Length: 134
Image (cartoon, rainbow, N blue to C red; front, top):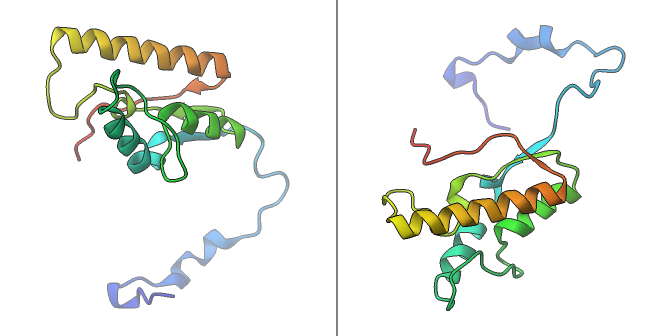
């Protein structure tokens, strides 16, 4: 375990937080959700590789990669009630370039395709991100 004392951290100051919890701590008021950024590298790679397809799209899930749809199915299967899909994982969206009019139509169609899939799966969108830059 790393020693944080060199940073002025004194673990004993937080003993008051370590009281045993009584009763039923979790009463269902918190909802589980997954941000698809958890699968960022494999999803982005899948979409990037799909650009070489005759009709660029979502890409195929393999042992190393996962596409956007399969990551959402996985979230549902493990009990997530909500997802944050983020625009990064929609084919055609670019973090930096402004899309042309035809690209906007394509992106909108892909977003609607994704939304319909999510609705059919019975999972809900809790939020989404568009080029967060901290």
